[in-house]
Structure formats: C-alpha cells, structure tokens
Image (cartoon, rainbow, N blue to C red):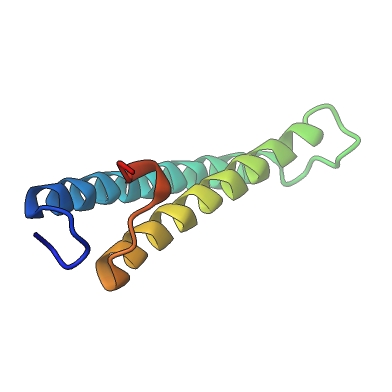
Length: 93
C-alpha cells in the first residue's frame, strides 16, 4: 500500500491517466496555437466589421479554452506527483 492507502498498481494507473490527460491537453493547446497563428496571418487586414473579421475572434476563444484545459491537466498532474492528491474524478470513494 502507498502512503494514501491505495495499492501501488492503482497509483501507477492514476499517474498514467494523468500523464495521458496532460499530453492530450498539451497537443490540443499546440494545435490551437498553430491554428490561431495561421488564421491571424490570414486576417490581419480584416476589421471586426468586415465579413470574416468576427470569425477572426473564434481562434482566440478556442485557444483560451485549450489553455484552460492544459492548465488544469498540468495542475492535476503536479498535485498528484508532489502531494499525492488524486483528482475527484479518479477517486473510487
């Protein structure tokens, strides 16, 4: 048993899951950044009142959402590794 009462295999499963979440969120964030950069280059001359100008704001929303998910995944992983804190959705209580 680990210090928190979970068997070692459970601890490894949780770490594996959190690491996967972190890697997936990082990939999603990187994709969002690339797409945002691409669209920014294509829309720099458009104003918000022009036909595609408002669409230029959509990548920023996607980017913020991806940053939020990446930050949460990083926070969950760090808290688990450093403090042994298991996210609520992975607890079996």
